[in-house]
Length: 141
Image (tube, rainbow, N blue to C red; front, side, top):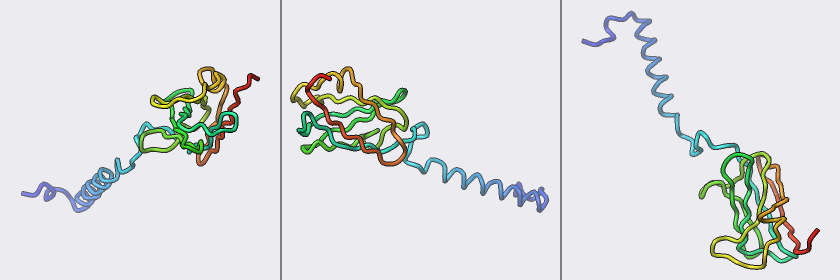
């Protein structure tokens, strides 16, 4: 015996609509590649130089007030693009402290503390594209 046989025509129609809505909901939930707790991101890129020379291999960290930092590594021309995850470009929207450091396997001239360990660099990341060039100097302010 079909469980719908005892229901009125209107009730059967309502049940079918409810089942269809549930099926659609289940098939569309989770289709995004983005984690449900991932914050809004803005893309950040630029160049990093020290005394006018590209800082090849330097790492640029964008650290929000709360949440995970993003990192970009400068190429031979000093160009970088910050990554939030290994396969996700971007930086958390809002205020970020920016630091420049040498990567684990990289080295070069000393990075002045005002750009590194005691960074004075800040960036208010907006949705969309953000350009942030870092022109460091060895001289003290």
